[in-house]
Length: 222
Image (cartoon, rainbow, N blue to C red; front, side, top):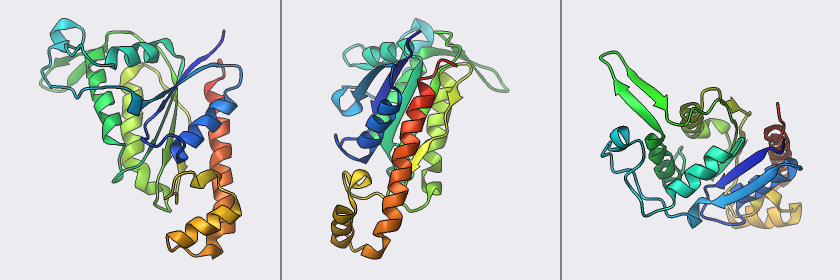
């Protein structure tokens, strides 16, 4: 069976660091059927909070690309979502898309809890999350990772969540794949000591390797 992988790139910069890491993950997914979608190319309206989907069984918003993306999502065995971290969180457009997945399950209220029932009965999918951020430490991405983990757990019964790629200390487009000479120029431009070039270059190579290996993992059948 050929594994179908859907990669959603949630950055507004084609060719930026998130996009580069997505491509590296897809390189690792050799042999899989892959489709890459840029969120910026989709027209997704915000959830209206009307809750009509709970009665209708589908979202009442018709004139946008949500159903197109939902169908691609449902058809795929593995999902890659990449995005920059903005203010400790996922970009607004990605949150808007995730909100619309409320229509994919029924919610019953009880005094103790909410009971969620998926309309599509998805048993399992593999998920790889790739985040890029300017902060030098991974902890700045914790809220974003938590949101993505919740999304995975809400959209299928037994999600397999691969260890996320959290690429830190990235401020300029293309920085993660820059050669040392270019990195030195970038660091000087944004007032970072060129003495860090060797250290950060090695870190960036590790992030690229992690993305590649993550792609290999989501392309496996088991």
